[in-house]
Image (cartoon, rainbow, N blue to C red; front, side, top):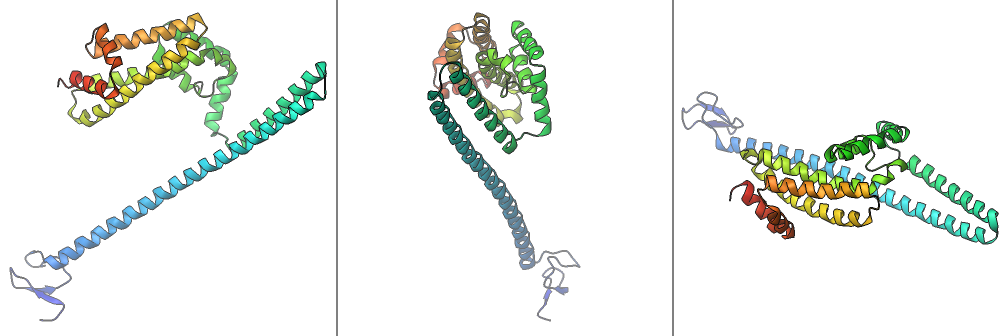
Length: 289
């Protein structure tokens, strides 16, 4: 028998040692089978290494972009501070109306320069820019729409409306009056949305691990809501918007009473718990533990 041949232990046929199975009876040849298996593992390892390398490159690029952004913003901040100092020195050399005009002109020039630099270096995609231009152009109309949503108690829709028109993160000055109420509404939105998902899917076996994640997130968001609520409640001077903020607190408590089968005292006791205790309480309710 040649060195590169082997006899099948089952049928006695002679075949090439590189074959994984006997070509006559199909009996596996362990050494060749192991070699094939190890070759496949090596291919998988190489694929994983390639994917990891790609991910490392992507993360590295993101870090470098963040670093460039931070470095540029520090440079822009220094330029602004230098401009501000120059304005102060210049202002001392003039008096009366000339002084005010000089300060205004110099500050406007500094602001315009910073806006131009920022827009050049960090321009948004065309679609986002178009949405923001639309928001600025129709700010008065959108502000009236936002007021109508708040007046009707549609706080979830209010938040969705702000996001859809890029008014949450980039509000025009017409939306300055919504600042406090929008902060509270954003946290309110996260809490209500998570509660609804948990209630609707709590009996779904495929949602078991997802439920744990959403419970933890809800406990985090409900604490965030009341932190923002307390801060904005004390800072909001407009009685109408303050009433909306207070109403969101009432609505959130009502939802917890309904979804978590609690009375008023139970809700307050729940809010006074630690985050871990809150999570345990919700599991008891939703999983009947």
